[in-house]
Length: 129
Ligand code: THU
Image (cartoon, rainbow, N blue to C red; front, side):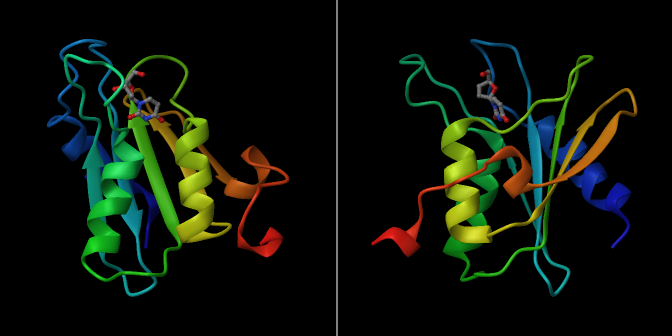
């Protein structure tokens, strides 16, 4: 799939972000090997701490639909520096997606594709248990 297609879906879902506190909207689009796309946006709330990132919303949607394999995730924000997944999301992406491609993008046309292992070195995972 052309990464621009995945990015376009992340741009679209970003509009649904519930970001009333930070005003920082994020969209994510997660791709399966079969070409299905699961999207997510960040969802905040008045306690702040219960906020869920866009990446995890996309992942939860996909896992709960029975998907278990993923190839790419696109993450879109506005602003000069595109968002980079937080530590919690990196851990969960590693657990459920393995070393997928992470496409960081912004609304202004910036694109950077990395492997998850590049931004999440020496992860703790089931291999230690
Ligand atoms: N956020 C995401 O959804 N994904 C990221 O990769 C970085 C941060 C959200 C969480 C919160 O709603 C807002 O951005 C500000 O931290």
